[in-house]
Length: 311
Image 1 (tube, helix red, strand yellow):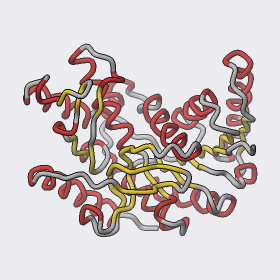
Image 2 (image 1 turned 90 degrees about the vertical axis):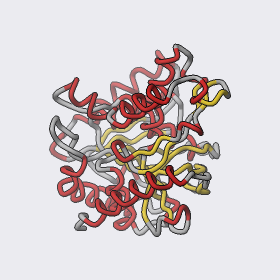
Image 3 (image 1 turned 180 degrees about the vertical axis):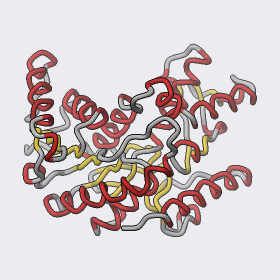
Image 4 (image 1 turned 135 degrees about the horizontal axis):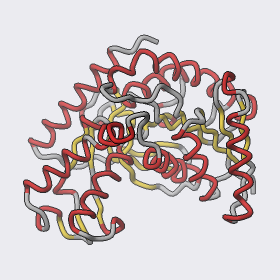
């Protein structure tokens, strides 16, 4: 059986760590790409990771390159390329420079892998997934943004820590934009099947929600010279695994919604079924009036971000 091919564009912290997670999961052969100015850097990282394979016991051909030719016929492409967020910088501040980067990357990816599914990680996510969609010309189901998987991981982590339980027993749902704009849904959140509001006070839940919303900037402020990469890369690879292995996972993603939730043609965070064809279904959860108000406000900000995009 032909092995899947996963290309990762951007060999910085997020990209190289995504390659590590993907190799460990044996998702297929991996191509790690960075800009020509980095010369041997992606090749060196790929070789180092390949040399770990006998120790960890995974089989994968791992290539590092500054050219797009080796990415040809990829099944999934993860786009991490872009300027990282720095202290004092909002995601909105990144929009102009990263639009140019994601546009250039997507043109090359579409040229060499016209049948791939694109997973966009670059920030500001909700705008960059729109850029990748418009530039690639791909069908809406073949372009998706990594946002909700990361946000929900932070949310679940903080709940587990507060209750001193395994993260595996925390199930949750959130929607809307990435980071500050996300809309956690406590009534759809449970621990071992027990609804979260039965286990924590509204005050503690709100504190956890606030920390999850600010999860990215909390790490930026601690690191001072960079941003998060372990959890973002793991989130992207979880999505890639669902697609490559046709797992039909229902994960919160920045997926294209038109009639769904009344969005009207934008990529926003919603529960989506991921399989071989990319986004195979948008799951429409029933929202209360208050939840719908928060979701609509989040969608409004996504629309504002997209309006600033100049391709």
